[in-house]
Image: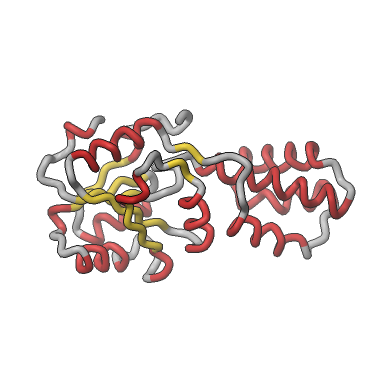
Length: 207
């Protein structure tokens, strides 16, 4: 799908962040690298071996299983779980996060067409903001308006969307949400706005 195939009457586009605009894995793996480096310094453990364990755990179980796998393999003190969470929220990444190319193209076309760009994202607001600050936006950041759904009510609740509509004097028919999981789709349905799955634009295995 490309921009010209979207209903031209749409005036505002609402994006989720993770795995919609960029691959979340790119953020998490850099955090794992930083955490492994931290533990190598504090506990004299092998950072490369720890990073390998965390990467495999992420691939097999998802992010929620990563610290447990590391703790089991290296007998990491539970106190480091707090350090891990702090790092997830405020890590300064070695490398910029890159948008999916198709999403970069799409957003640039939206801006050229003088329509509005929004991000409405679930998750810890501090962590999501940290990701946003480290994405290479190619100048698009000046056009983005961000809402952190957890500050209202996490999606699929429609509170953040309702606030967005009210604050920007929009009508429901003006909006389309672009997400990638059922939560996004249910949130669009609850908000009374149209929905497009990000997979219509991108192959999520590549940027």
